[in-house]
Length: 273
Image (cartoon, rainbow, N blue to C red; front, side, top):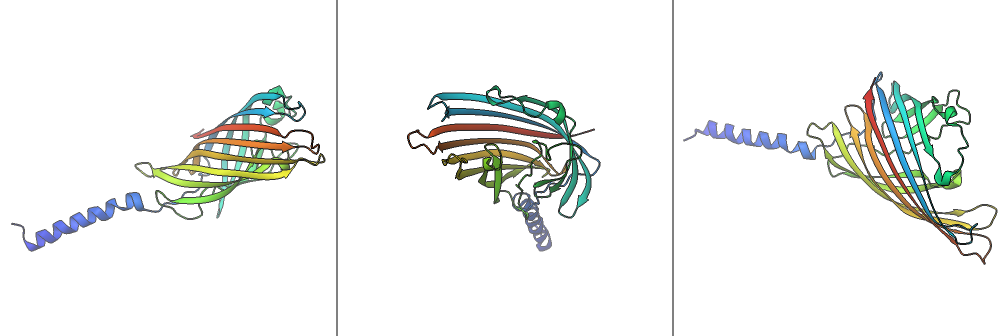
């Protein structure tokens, strides 16, 4: 029979084990972009676009077009800031297949090798501060990016909301706001990898220009991310954006055009030399 002191020690051991085990699921962790200065992070972007529907110009004739873009880049952290990092990004290679075979307005040789300097916030927001010798400002592969990560620590199952801006057309008129909901689904056994899912809705109403018509877009966003907390970088992102757009012209006799667009994107990253 156990003595009183032995029983007390056994109870303490059980309680101690419970206290240690509980935080593994319930502990709050910080999700942030915080790469190490001196690292080189290699990234590969693969994006497919499918467009189908009717065209105002074709008087309701059906159209279906596809396009793709494949880009390899490098991110080189230069200096840490209180709220993020200064990062140099280099475009190494580009393979373009424009939608419908449209001509590429910017020569590929003018984009490959382009270098920009960005501030990358701990919350994932990106802002270009120096485009180097690249003509025309920001390269199309490093646009300003809205933050996606939470501003405070979260536990597994925790949720947060962010407003994203996504391109769905040309120029500033082609930017749509997406109200996105994020969830920390799980952590790897050692806590290094955070698995995050996202979904959101898009709703945009705007004019089409001097024609006097209107354009309304609705859609959905879904996807997932993996944040490597040791690397301090998002290493795998998968997104699917579905957009339905109704375009009316200033001519009441014309039927509205219906356009469906699906964008599938994957961005992978890994540390390299």
